[in-house]
Image (cartoon, rainbow, N blue to C red; front, side, top):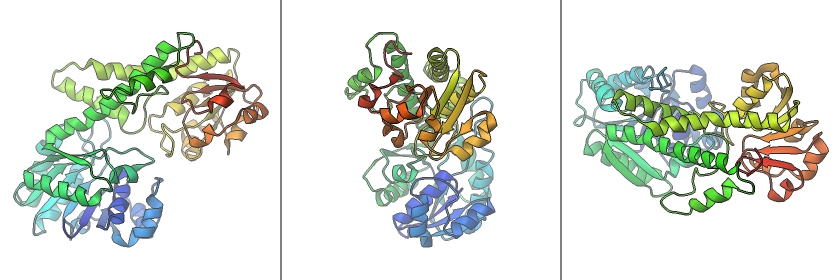
Length: 442
């Protein structure tokens, strides 16, 4: 890795974010993607993905990034290859290797033509056992070489959040490395020592242990989210109780911590829901009962139903509802498993409600999913016009700047259901304010 040349197979949100992050830190990057349009745009310095900092870094460090449609061309002249292809969930929740295996085979064929030691890193999420039992023999057959002697193999997933992928990649809490052999692990540890802007600890272990650790970590995060929402549901039945105060307090205990421990909507996005289900599927294969992920999944699904019932309670005869925010989190346009989107879906199917939606980034994506069942606004204030209820469904910073006066002027009835406690408390006291986790409200 002294020469700092890496290849990345797959230039989606994670792959391209990794590429520009490597380039920012002085590495030369060969990026490969099967989509000719993606390759063309990267070559032209245009980001094909909508992700924070990617376009700016591509413009600044694009001279260190080369894009190609051929795996062999990408691998040639590099020391490390990261495979970052999609592994979609199957019917039982297990991750599919349909894109991973052809990519790995092509990498193996490219290694057949290379001299010197090369490390292959599986970055996409896989089912435990995949790296050693599936990818390793495939690479050895295709390359004609021996893993651990001629090349190294690691499982090295990233713990990132959409909207902050580059920052998270360069400043991880820790680095997880499942290694085929100690040499491969040492290469990755040195790599991250040069790559990261902070100084993270590196947890090295067997590949299967790292594969379990990856989905287990996300399952633990989802458990904390659902635990906070369970407390919210209880607090709502107790006049004067505030679940946010409770979670803030117990989060001060170092055994618990405050991250992910806040009442709101349930978790969504492309990782948390499917990792939780995949862990259940893996445990079931092994004959192990795992009631915690099952309870977490059910608690998460219940959050949308709770909000929809609350809306019907606040507007028993129906009316106009303004939904602010559609993605599963702010700073992204991704609508995968978004509970905000599910709320919009649910209300739009009720004939007694008319629904208007606004989001700073996701309106184009929303139009493809919601169609003509809702009205689309170009601003938060436009969305609020004539509404009898405002639902703050995604905690975008701009929604926190709404004032009581704006709500009173724009809305037919200034009533707010705040799913994330976005509204300034001083402004909230001047309108009909309701929030997840507030006693005697929902």
